Length: 252
Image 1 (cartoon, one colour):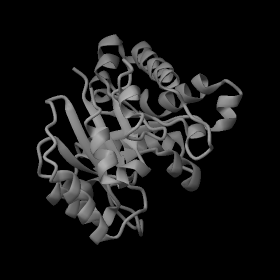
Image 2 (cartoon, helix red, strand yellow; image 1 turned 60 degrees about the vertical axis):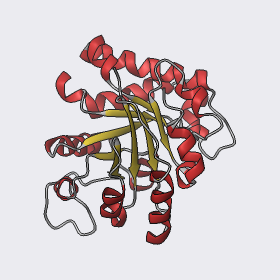
Image 3 (spheres, rainbow, N blue to C red; image 1 turned 90 degrees about the vertical axis):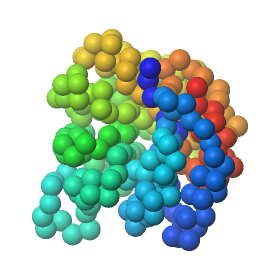
């Protein structure tokens, strides 16, 4: 059974005091997750240790929002996978659309980051997805397939099952346009087919694929109920305790 995951991406938000309050508000609700359900909190680097300490509830995990592609060295300002492992961090978000757009992260660089995350037994949440210009040109499938091929296709079938995919329709984030649950399902099914063609149907069927397009408490259940959608990578709504609690409880 595939893991169903509600992943919070706090991005560059909150002070440490506000971060602690938010974590406590969510944890104190005593949410009971099924064996195949997870809640993951991708917090800013300074709050990783705090999150790791607060999230002692079963199936709740802290995650990093990024890591560097090298083991160690003279890379001022970067954080290594080994550092994350030393903090007992089990998940890392890689290839988020903002990292690709603002920091020019290429598919090849992300392949290196994925390699090192797996080397240190950290499960990557690998983001893919198309901007508005690509969706308008109706070449989104080819665009996303290339992202998958160039960053993931060097892995073995066994390693692929240690990676979570997050599909972000960038055109539906902050543009006023909205992706429907059927559009989400359509792309998730296509991603699973691309993975199946390369790694086999069994492997593809075991990979969790999350949706990252403006998930909110009001639409989470409809989106998550789609057969190939295994949860969400949630931005703004994850900063509001009541919203994210509802989203976690919407997992199937």
